[in-house]
Image (tube, rainbow, N blue to C red; front, side):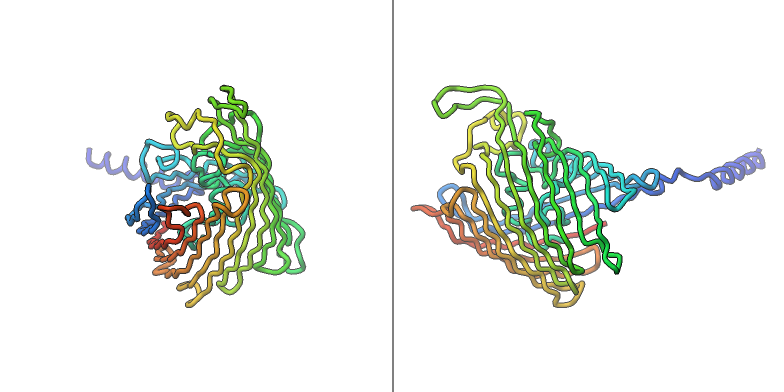
Length: 378
């Protein structure tokens, strides 16, 4: 009996040892990252007090792989926060597949980053500051001024993109990307059956330099109730047209990064941002008092103290949520980051803020912020 068991085990080991798992399984990779944060915020007025807190800024896990060599896919979850709101609950943020047979023509479908601005698609750790620039946060589907739920710069749709026009060294000189999206942010179906068209093109005249132009046309909509300008109650779908553009420039060489972007938006927003599909904001179609104009600009430099290891950085970041400078918020950032290993980084940012929207008898338009983050990848 013992000999029979041993012989059977040897046969099974031989069979499974020779068996090969499918190639698509071998191509699957698990990765992720986390950002642990401490932040002090000196903003205080009659409604808000100064604060300091530890926070789990981001926690994400992703799977990616390839199918039939020409197809790449990715699924990414964000799991920090709670399950009560659209903005912070565990949720899908990326789920897409892309046909990559040709460098000059690729097709992507699913949920992924809007092709708008240079700042939007940069990895949160590599981005270098406590968040993306204000104009990108408000005008590229992070905490969008139109009133959509926080969407991490993403939407659901289909996109084509590619690189072409190689120089003598084999480096492509032109990149393009354009997509059609629902216009409602992540994990939400289209409401008004009007799609957003978003795209951009950039040229790369010298190695490390990008000069880009981006455009956005479409809408953001809700189904609910509101009162029109004549004071009459209305119900149904209210669609707010959005027209945006950005002009961008970046130069990265010898571990230096210099980047600047100007973003402009025309289009009204809803008074209350959507954070929970079950609360009143989901059907409140009244308009924000900020009107239909917004714009912002930022400029940053990241300089190596020890190349690939230790950096100093600074950023000028201005955003006007309405037409004119009455509510303009300007933020001046300076900081340092240090890579303990390639997968572990410590960074600190001090910010001085001048917020004109805080002017008033109880307001304090000038205040400081401090942000300390420990980031890891796996």
